[in-house]
Amino acid sequence: MNRVLTTALSLITLGLLTTAPAQTQIGNVTLTPAKAPAVSMAASYAGEDVPSGWSEIKGRVTGPNGSALRLPAGSEVRVTVLDTTAARILLDVSFGTTRLSTPYQLVYNPVRLSDTHEYVVRAEIVDARGKVLYRSADAALPSARRAALNLAVRPR
Image 1 (cartoon, rainbow, N blue to C red):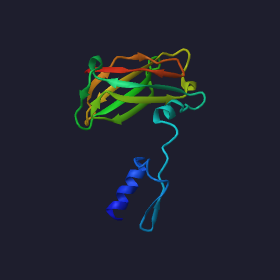
Image 2: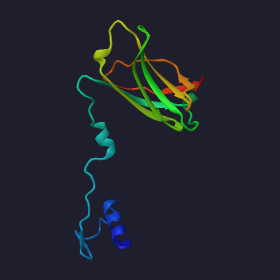
Image 3: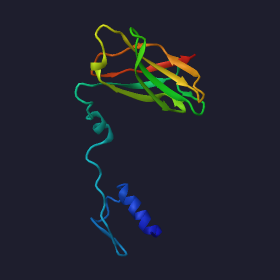
Image 4: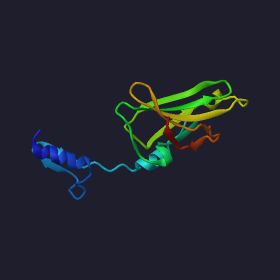
């Protein structure tokens, strides 16, 4: 593809040629500008539903006192829901990151919870070898269907 055609396609895709006519002819190719999406990313995320009967916790894992923090290469964040009564892990989510603060999201089915047990949420940062570098204090599992919970970690 020649440079003019590639540039025109890129600009139309990005919606930068909004003042151009409805269609543009370049050689044997007719270009029609794309319309911008009707819904913004923020609005689309806000309207996103958790499955019926399920619960969601989302927030950020931050450094000590909410500070930003660079992490060693290969570091991983682990956010865990623990059943402290039965001493078992109910939910464990891990993902790689190179810095804090970083967002997380947990979606779980509360049918798995017992009214007689206590549950906490904890975040840990481990290095590439699995050594725990940082850990948050245990936070009570929110009871709301949708909840925000930020977890500040401190050196281990």
